[in-house]
Length: 195
Image (cartoon, rainbow, N blue to C red; front, side, top):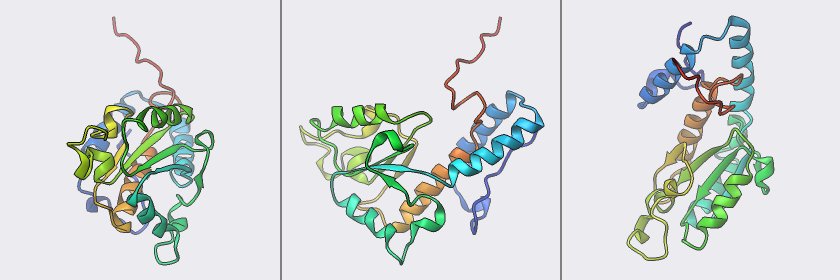
């Protein structure tokens, strides 16, 4: 069973600079050895999941305003399959954290993250979300949300350009396309203990 390379329209596999961690994840998933029928069903389900991302936006500052430009005609995020944004975490599968997270906001962010159904993903957008940004030495700002919730994709910038949003969300699509839907990563099953 060979490695599955993700297919994204109008982007070549070689254009992505950080394929190493995805290739390692593919090798680990392929080591489980699922049969051909399950792999075909996996590919179909992963294609559907990666092209219908429903996001929950937690926008607290200027990165959220920049994200709004993706819905306009010039950038039109509908053609990539992630235009549906939800106001309830129970209807979403991706949490987009956009902006500064204060210590007072952190427990609420964790509660919202816990309400998202599995499999769930987190995208950290902007310097303030990733590392605290210009407020990193402040007493009231969380210096990176990865200290509170696990982050799948980082989109750097202050605020990031729409092209950076697209690149980060395409990286998330690639990650979803490589996962095993039947067992393994998404079901959070413990690996069998070798005796």
